[in-house]
Length: 100
Image 1 (cartoon, one colour):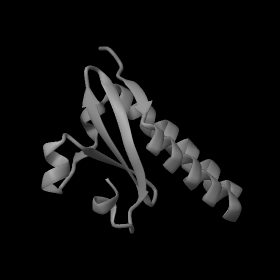
Image 2 (image 1 turned 180 degrees about the vertical axis):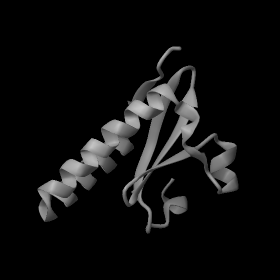
Image 3 (image 1 turned 45 degrees about the horizontal axis):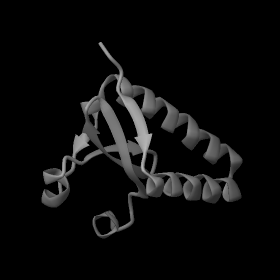
Image 4 (image 1 turned 180 degrees about the horizontal axis):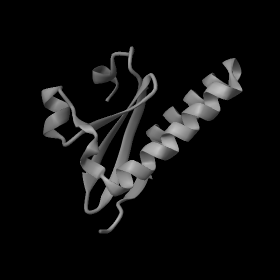
C-alpha cells in the first residue's frame, strides 16, 4: 500500500498560518493541540485518503472536494494521482461555500 503525499495550496498555507497565529495569541496550548491534531490528520489522510466526507455542497462535490474535521476547523481537500491537495482550512462557523 502506497501512502499519498500531502500538498498544501498557498492559500491553505495562509489559512494554516492565520489559524496558528490566532490560536497562539489566545493559548499556546490550543495552538499546539491544533498542530498535533493536524499532524494526526495528515497521517490518516496519507494512509486513508478517502476517509474524509464528500462535500455536501453540489458544486464542491462535483469538483471532488472532501472535508476532514480538525477541532472547530474544516480542512477541504481533493485527491489526484496518489496526492492529497489541501485546498483550504476554514473555521466551521464561517460561510465556507463563499470562500472556496
